[in-house]
Length: 291
Image (cartoon, rainbow, N blue to C red; front, side):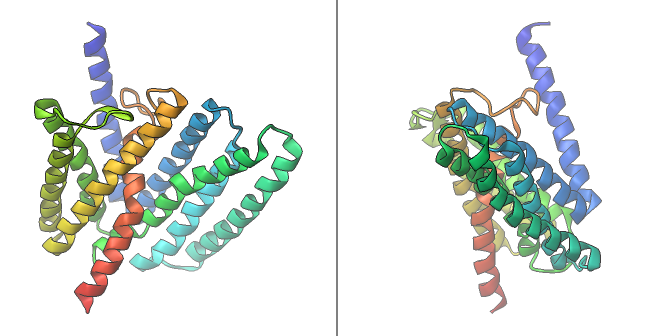
């Protein structure tokens, strides 16, 4: 067996496992979905700190990861209200996580005073950047499925999966079109393989998935196609941003958490970056649809 075939098999096997984890989390219910977001957050922040460390900074990894997990946990607790899952336990967990977040953020400055590492400004800034770059979008993602389903108060795993298909549809179609007819480089400095042909192919693929998503969840076609456009455009920027970080750090992948695919950021960078834009779009779209 050649090395190329072996790598292809590893990539396929890990892809199947990843898909199984995502499907399992979605169909377990909202709590499974929240657990998946927390996992993506914890590993993604760790990988971001590894990239930052390659540039000579010394982020406070443990405190940064704890702060990130607390933020997404708090958002998950408050997000439970969107599905009538709110009770004393979820409210207590959300409130406690929010308090812990504030304490940990304050501790970062205290710890930096006593750890006596070079470049304390960069260290604290990088630590907080990991929270902002990964955890804030994942906290926002807690509310995106509820907004996409029109606040129907019932967890529908297909809403989240169809949103994910918008992201992956963009990636798959961009790749297929790019390797087939891609000639005009989009941003060769950061990602030499990306082309404008692939970019437009990705947009079309995402729009098609938006129409399919509206059909599957019996949603508003205009809203879902608009969401697909927003997700497609923001996903490209998210992918380029992560490529920028990796190139600056001098690495090919953000990590090795997913064999054959690289790190968590390599697989979910587009999802992370698209979440805030999708949330804003859905918030505005629901105002007009319910007016």
